[in-house]
Length: 329
Ligand code: AVJ
Image (cartoon, rainbow, N blue to C red):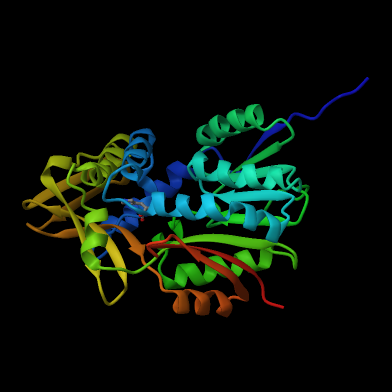
């Protein structure tokens, strides 16, 4: 008798109440801080994920298309350079990008396993089911985890390992958070493993601001959606209509910032936290940073964590970069 192991597995490493607890902690500290902040990870409930998908199709939001252009052109080269046995992917990348890599790596004949890591079991379930259907020889070993806190990779996945972190999600981290993230990546990588990192590049601030303040108002709705999430999960009484979407370029920090501007003096109750929060008229609450990169400084910060940039590819308009890095010597 032949028993086959299932081609799709899902390892849930998050305790059942992890996300609820993390949201409470983030909202409690962010709303009592000066200035007020909320971390961007809470944008992505079902509605927020749908809005983000719409953002990636906006004429003003170029990063997704630019990264796809690079991957379309360079995936075969990436496959030949890495000869990856397992592709790990941090965060639920759009399946379009994943498939460009999977196509090249399966065509090269080295890949046997795709290992996505994400906080959302439903996203992993959906993607995994479709991928084992479309890639008959592929094992999909999905892990539900918060990879910022725990970067342990599934141990039985064959090497060499290619860890992809696409979409310039790295830009959501400030320099200190990036440094500690690179260090834990470096600890995880063996000598023949590699990191594939997507990073949005610094450019004309007008182009950048338009990408985060589109004329159709989709990004504004995406930004305000975090208030709906807090209302629903923590029984708060934020009125999204009482805030305006703000996207600005911070030249000093080389980053786009999204804020919500209070349209009037108001007091918001968060009963689940026993909290009442006062907003002054025009007060800004920061909801996201999206750092923009340059080749020299990004190469330097990776080197400081023991990662050597081996290849640097951009789209023809040089708006976005994809880099391949390996452990230094
Ligand atoms: C998913 C973090 C890469 O920073 O460009 C898009 C999120 N926010 N529009 C970005 C986002 C507003 C996006 N990342």
